[in-house]
Each structure stands twice: as structure tokens, then as C-alpha cells.
Length: 372
Image 1 (spheres, rainbow, N blue to C red):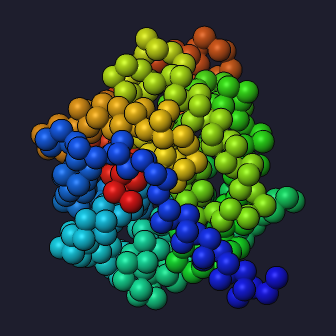
Image 2: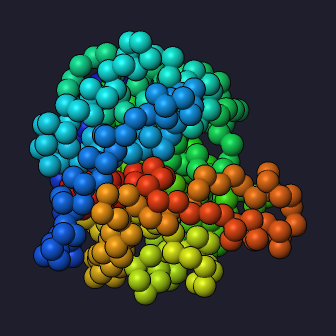
């Protein structure tokens, strides 16, 4: 098929996917108790982010890191969906030094955690149509595919479940900004490969093949990545059926493990373990998106998604900091070796923080899903 014709068909298909709302789906996401609406919460959490200094600016890092990217992306989405022009301009102004005196804070490393930076300039481009942002973001998406494996997947792929947000997000954003279907093809090919290799019979994902535990946030990255991809992947794409099946299988498993408070646990299949908010935010985003797009039956998943949101926001303090966020967590095998009991203790002993951007970002994504 001619490239222009294919791009036009994909544009039409994704527009339909983004606008059709199943009958009754919205009813689960209205009539919020005072102070719990996505608009109110989103404004608070986005303001919390825009007021922060970047860690590179504080001398803590050499470059902008992925949790900052994820919260920035979520904040920009909230600004757009609430038509908050002042917030949007401040979020863009926060980015301007990275185009000038602090360009060195954009890492050139060939690593998924660094390439995902591209989602921010691509989102700014989508909202402003200024080419400089497209060039920067698309360049990072293309560099990710400079080296590929024999099956066409980026050589940056590690087959860690975190990858399925990091790779997917920047490639899908590059498609949304450029309308070039190669970016969707890349993301879909990689997602399908990860599903085939890593998804377990119960629908969940081990942190990695040598760390066989259902770590909450790790699974959250996959859930959010699939939801982002499916939002833009047309119904006639050859990989869509495989990805949608993997997504539904995961959502069905998550439904079984959701606790009475609406949250999911640090290790998903351990009900006695502490409630963890970053994973809950990611699952909320994925589930709300599925209900609103008709991928999931609303009568089953609508109440669960609503309960997740209302439970999640109870863990936001007066300063709009999300509490009970698991710290950055390497796969257990890399930290403590292959003994299963030692690995279990490693995950259970992870500390939790308040205000960690790993937890702030998924709240913002959930806001965007509830408002779309």
C-alpha cells in the first residue's frame, strides 16, 4: 500500500479509536466526592511537578531521568485536557533550557531509560506544532532503532518488563507527532515479542526471567505501555489482536488481585504485603483506558477502575505528594542472586517514599485517562 494512503487510513482509524466512547462507560467516572475529581487532583499534582527543580539542576544527576519524563508527560496532558494555558506555558518554559544551555542534560546513551526522554518534546510539539520539538523527540525515537536484532527489534531491548513502557511510549509518541506508521510498527513488533516471551499463564509478568516475582510497578509499566499503544494502534494492524489479547489477559488477572481498598500490592499475588501506589496508578490508567475505549466490559471493570482511583488518591498528602511509592528497584537476580527465598525478601524489604516521581506520574496518567 502506498505510504500516504496507509498513513491516512491509520490516522482515520486512530481518530475513531480515540473518540468512540462505549455507551454507559462514562457513568463510572462521574459524580466524584468532593476533592476527588480528576480535574482537581490533576491540577494539584501537576503544580507539584512544575514547581520542582530537575535533579540535574540540583546536581543529583547528570541528565534528566525517566521518572521526571513520565511526570512531565502526564502534567502536559493534564494541562491540555483542562485547557490550563498558564500551566502549559510553565511546563514548556521548564523545558526551554534543555534546548539551550542545558542541552547536555539530555543523555545520548543508547538505553531505554534515556530514549524515553523523547516523549516530552513530542508532546510539546503535539500541543504547539513547533518543529524544534518534533526534531528532538523523533531523533531519539529513530536513534533507538539504529541497531536492531535479527527480528527487527531495537538492540536496546533487555527483556525486562520496564522496557514495555520506555520503548513503547517514545515510539508511539513519534507516531502521534509524525503520523509515520513505522513507529507504530516498531512498538507493536516489540510489544508482541515481549508478550510471547514474558507473559505468564496467569496473565502477569515476572520482573525478568531470572527474577520470577510479580513486582507491582514492573507489571504497571507493561499495563501502561499496552494501553498507550492500543490507544493509537488501528484495528486492522497485524499485531493488534495479539497485543489486545495480552492486555485483556493481564487485566483479568489484575481484577482478581485488587484489594478491598482498591489498591494493588508491592508483590501483586501477596495480599498480605503493603499497598503500593505507583503500580496502582499505572493499573488505574490502563483499566480506565480500557473501559473508555471498549476493550474491557464496563460492568465488570468500570467499578474496579473507579475503586482504584478513589483508593489511590487517599494516598496523596496535603502538598500533593503521593505516599507509599516503592523506591527504584533493580531485578532481584542482579542484586541478591538466584536464591528464590532471598529474592522474595529483597522485594518485600524495598523501602517506600513520599513524593517520588515514580508515583506522581501514574496519578497524572490516570487523570488524563479519566478526562479523555
